[in-house]
Image (cartoon, rainbow, N blue to C red):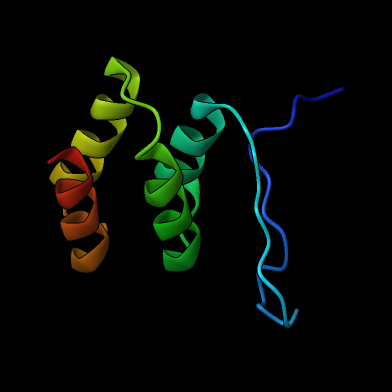
Length: 82
């Protein structure tokens, strides 16, 4: 058995409704670090705004410093820290 690392609903955005996913901060951090989809990274940043923890700041800082990350995601991560 393997633990659930993160959850994404409707990654192709084919549902005509909004969804709300509730998961712990460490799953959002993992999604931000390891999911390569820009929409998923953006969702993770939006969710991490509600978790003012040192681990969240580290995940956001790592995202900002990663030059392989799309620049708008890096900007959103920086804005989330303010």
